[in-house]
Length: 358
Ligand SMILES: CC(=O)SCCNC(=O)CCNC(=O)[C@H](O)C(C)(C)COP(=O)(O)OP(=O)(O)OC[C@H]1O[C@@H](n2cnc3c(N)ncnc32)[C@H](O)[C@@H]1OP(=O)(O)O
Ligand SMILES: O=CC(=O)O
Ligand SMILES: [Mg+2]
Image 1: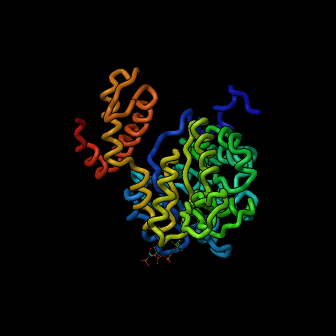
Image 2: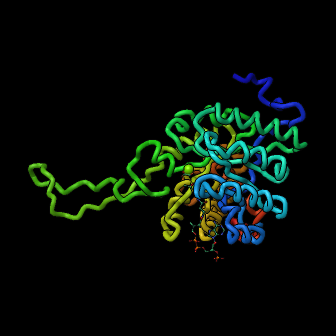
Image 3: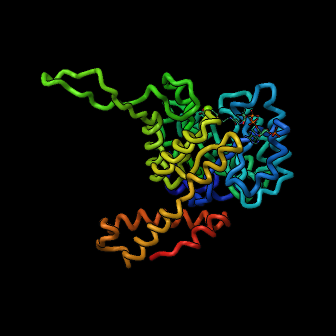
């Protein structure tokens, strides 16, 4: 166990001091691109400023024979592109893979000063974070990096879910967690072959009509309600992240053409407390930016409650509803997010600025 005294000490002589608080930088969409795919790589400079996070993916979805090309492509992009307000992340290969050591030892010296966050897949427990933490400190020290690179863990194994709290607490570098529904489904032996999203078989059914003897009458239509396969895991992530001052994200939604269901899945995550989701295709950036930004109506309502509540204590009636100390805190969450987003998104700022609180 690392004691409180040692927790914020650098793990290598010359490494930058760990951050004390994870900055709340907007990250509505973490947009994945394959840095070894020339068409995708060419689009990266023009995407800066249109998306909160650009992530060069080196892990799954990059063919084994292209791993080195992808890594080299990422170094080139990192060195050549000015990311401005957009965060620059990468997803390295899994810690048991033949590529990860070269990923880290190549990326940190070459573009470690540009990388905000390294996403680590298939994290099983605190030991995985400790390994990356120490190695990053050594590499940062050697390369003279002055700002610590943060770590984001993908929750995609049953063991990772069971160890969620210790993963979040493993290092001051821990920035957040993403749900990895595809690998997690496989690891848990769930019987869905979809990459995230719902499943028509996972449902509850309206009660049947019953005869006088109480026996169900099976002749009527009974409405079914599809349920969210990921609710439990996302809720666990949200609590663990909030407890540790880090950020939860929904992961991939593989049905690229079903933009409506993607929006629903993202919105469920937003309502439960996630700050963003992955975008696998440019079409999903727009969806994430929309869903993970509070609506004008929500911001207006929140500002009205805050204004009506004065010093934030007591209870008032507003539009027939009770508001009190707790609801004003909920409203402050909404307004704080709106302010963070308005600071980087001029369109949103204009919409929020135009709100008149009556
Ligand atoms: C379970 C997990 O681990 S999920 C995370 C790993 N998976 C990924 O990262 C997948 C990333 N996305 C992709 O590989 C692709 O978007 C695919 C395979 C899903 C679809 O690709 P395509 O069939 O080429 O999509 P489509 O034809 O609609 O592409 C339109 C254009 O957008 C580009 N494009 C597609 N995806 C992206 C992307 N993620 N980033 C930037 N550009 C992209 C294409 O290159 C194409 O460019 P062009 O107009 O110059 O030809
Ligand atoms: O990496 C993501 C997943 O769903 O698996
Ligand atoms: Mg995965």
